[in-house]
Length: 285
Image 1: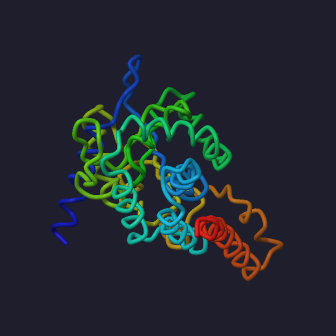
Image 2: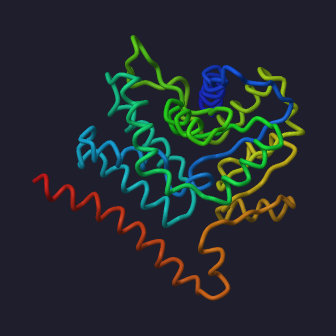
């Protein structure tokens, strides 16, 4: 347990140290922190990148199948499983070991423009833009590798990103992490470290997430907001009177659609994901 806490702290400090600011940045005293997966973007950003790289022959369909299974569980459960996040991150590290960082960034930029834009959640983007318009810093906080998180942040015109930091030697990935994936407690550590570095008053800051795993990050700030919350986070928000924003189509259908039908829709979405990977596998045999 103590080892996990230490790894989370190391991951958080590494993420804050690696966070980049625009060259023309004007320091602020307040900020908004946004989770990415199922908050800013539908599904797993890392999975979308993996699929995009597979289509470009960077990964084989067999390699990306593991991402598909984790994504299927992500869609059906509507929550983030710590084991799935760790597996996805470790799998990604194994795939990129020895690859040039510049190549991964270039792929990330291309894939975001090509296939991730339509996965963005307009309602959450509007919230982020409100903070930008109010003159606040706006940071993404995600388990996705920091190089890819920074691509998303730049494309959205935000301040920057906190993400999982990998070891890099001579501009190539070693296949090892600095600490742990930026998830759960590690996100809270990263936000606190960044706040110290940038002189932010966390009591005047906001944080947005869909997952109960991000309760430590949400509790860090004076204005926690739950976006598309999973059941556990929704219950926590209601208990603590936190605001809830739900931009999912299913939220608007609850009054006219049965829980069974909604569950079936989630299974169908997962099936389509697995079907894509399976069809690719068959063509490679």
